[in-house]
Length: 191
Ligand code: URA
Image (cartoon, rainbow, N blue to C red; front, side, top):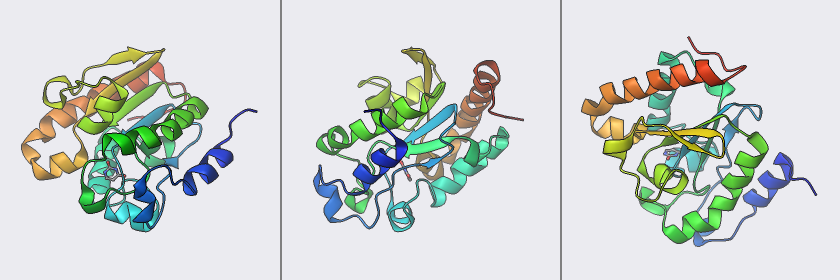
């Protein structure tokens, strides 16, 4: 039977495939247009996201919104998801077993969405999605093609909050994303 967003979301919301279900308040499934041509992937929910059930709603999310605004891209026109859908305690990196338990949900989201462009937010997502030895300081902003999908990684907004000296590089990466959207997308508006 063909997969549906509704089936996927309800499976995800009752998931107990790894131990993160024990401490979660909410499953953070993903948000945005199910018609989006651009998919952003973070690593996993933090405290605010766990509280609200929505990705990138805390300080890092506000910075992501600002970066999107710089290139005239509306948050509601893209899709935003994470590698793991439940909050790792103390905001630690998601463990390999947790990523492996959860990645099937993201793969199904990608299959339903069929994005033209995938933007990994930070090292963890880039290592899971682009290649396992991805070096964010060296390879952010580079483009990779996988099965007809253009992929890139940018610094995680939380990393930009910690180290604002990286912001000019992130700005350049978002400008390159804007150009790629103009080149490849049919209905995703940028400024
Ligand atoms: N950081 C992430 O990687 N994902 C979120 O949803 C929020 C913060």
